[in-house]
Structures are given as structure tokens and as C-alpha cells.
Amino acid sequence: MTLFLIAEIGINHNGDMKIAKQLIDNAAEAGFDAVKFQKRTVDKVYTKEFLDSPRESPWGTTQRAQKEGLEFSEDQYREIDAYCRDQGLVWSASAWDVDAQKFLQKFDLSFNKVASAMLGHKPLLREIAAEGRKTFISTGMATLDEIDEVVKMFRAANCPFELMHCVSTYPLDERNANLRAIPMLRERYGCDVGYSGHETSLTRLCDAAVALGATSIERHITLDRAMYGSDQAASVATHALEKFVASVRLVEEALGTGEKKISDAELAVRRKLRVDVE
Image 1: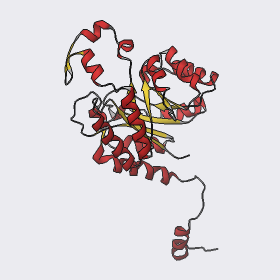
Image 2: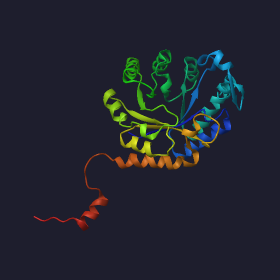
Image 3: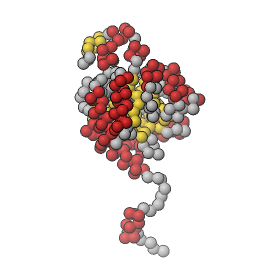
């Protein structure tokens, strides 16, 4: 199975279509398979009290101004949809409420994504599972009992899914990555398991995740880790994306088939160095 690479743009576009297209371009050029955004219906996700509270941002002085400044409209998502197709990339978005998921149903997405924070949002999970579309499910901040319940829900709906091991700290302290959870989840649930990372290093953890059998990798990407935004520091800068993809793809190839046999290259060395004495 070929490793599936997702470039998580999330909200790192800062509401700017030009930045979004630059990130899409860079992901495509580096060799990612998909890009992903985040979609929220602001008045459904947050309370009025919270939205009216103060927050300084490039868009104004309230939480509402900041949250709304990070959202793209339907017309903008249609522009993103066409742009990704031109670049040969598939795209999706993590919905944070049911209305946002229904919004995404307007597009012919090849997969859905459940963010770790949404594992307890049963109405949203039911809406996603009912689509029957391949779904990547991040497992950060969740107990095994909670993951059991989500897996049961998706299997009951006959919705294909892939779990993604994730530790939801931003950025992630690499010593807390607990990558051995990848084979554990695969064995427990009998499904493919990927890795969604929030570390600041480039490839160490993702290389190790692939070596442990991860079938997908998701990393946040950014034009510049110093840009405004809570996810920028834990993202891979676009100048390093090609190196990132080359590294994880090399690990994937180096794993081989597991079949022990002498390659043609090794056979040539054997003829020179092998000593057989009866």
C-alpha cells in the first residue's frame, strides 16, 4: 500500500486565497497526495459570549473578527476545488460542526477527516459516517474506550476509515510521541493506521512512524513558521517540503517486502566476496 501524504493547510492561509494557493502549489510540487483545510460554522462552534470577547488580530479586536477572518466562503472553496484539480491534488477539510460537514457535501471530496477534538461530537460523527466516504480519524486526546465507540459507529455505518495516531500538543514534545501506539492501534482495530504530527522537527518522527507501519502521514504546512497563527510553529515550512517527502518516501521504499532474497546488486558482491567451504 502506498503511503498517503496529507499537507494540512488548516487555517495557516490566514484567510488569504493567495497564501492558500501558494501552499497548494508547494504541496503539489513536493509530491503530497492531498491538502486539507478546516471548516467551522462560527456561530455554531462558539458561544456569543466568547465571540464578543476581546482578541487582537489582523481582522479586528474581537474573537468573532478573528474566527470569521479565517473562514473561506463557498465561492472561495469552489476556487480552491478547481485549483487543486488543476494541480492534480485531492483536498478535504475537517468539519467542526454538522453544518460545516453539510457544507462540505457540496463538493465531491475523496475523503473526510475527523479532527481529534471532534471525537466526542456524536452528531457530527454520525453525519460523516452516513456519507460512507473514506474517513481519516485522528485519535489525539482520546481513550481507547472512546476510540472503541467511534470505530463501532463507523463500522455500523459501513463507512471505510483509517485511524491516525496523534498526540494533541502544539507543538509536540517529541519524547511524548508514543509512536508504538501505531502498531497497537492496528492490532486492536484491524485497520490501517496513520500518523498526524505536530512536532517542530522535519522528519524524525514521521520517518519512525512509517517504519512502524503508518499508512498515511499528515503534517501542517506553512509559508513561514513565524507567521500569525496558532498552528504555524508546529508546521513544516514550504522550503523544506520536498526534503520531507523525499525522506518519508525513502523510508517507505527501504522497508521493502519483508521477503528474504538476494538482489541482483547483492549477487554481484556475493560472487566476489562469498566464501563457501565444505
